[in-house]
Image (cartoon, rainbow, N blue to C red; front, side, top):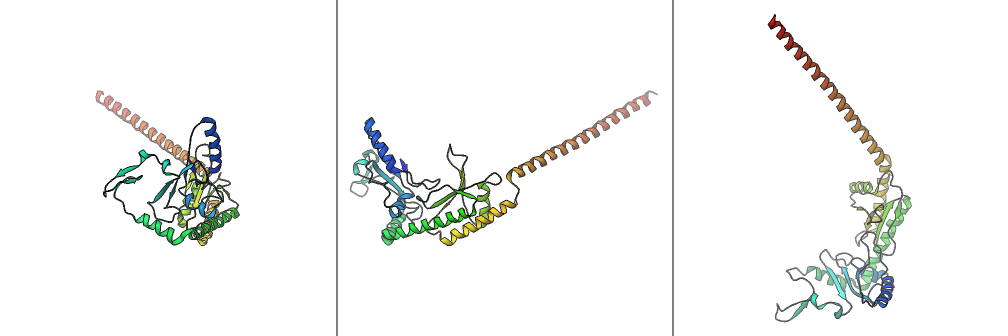
Length: 293
């Protein structure tokens, strides 16, 4: 399986390279390993702004492709598509045959009651926008992504982790996160109305933390410029705050002082109890002596 549009940084994996390597591997081993392309995001992007990119059925080993209509297909959540190169590439045991309406109806999907609104919405978008319409939308997303990327680079504070060729998103990390980290930036951006996720990369790259902004069709150039301004405000505010290390030292000292104060208070209380106990014993002994006398 190859991914055309990684969730983490929007990158298009090199499907052609995988195909070429797998052709040689199949020859040397006698295997017949095919390729499935997970193009959930990239399937509605690459055909319109990267038509020269070979990732689909132009490659002989690519047998199936899935794509999400609710991402860059411009339809609300609940619709996805999967297509096969040939009918023979879909195993017969995965197909359900029903005769609910009086004739044999082969279907790959699970059968349950569900509205058809998403299918109708996708059909409407395809007919209304067509190739040129989708091309314009995707080019606009890419242009706004570049505006955001260039704005972040001008701050001099970030490393850009994502690539220009891929899903129109910007994944970026702080060049110096010794004083403040990406999670603090994400948290403070919420005060400006932005929900920008921060997360660590997968195993073997967990030391890298990134912030990610996905550019959709309704994310305008004005919003991109405003986000850059708000990120600048957050950076300025963070510079005025003590670092996480300093804050931890202060908290540790405060806890230490509190423990010491508690111990001192406890020592005084114990000393008071000891004095009271000693006086009580002395009083009891005097009473006994007076009784004998």
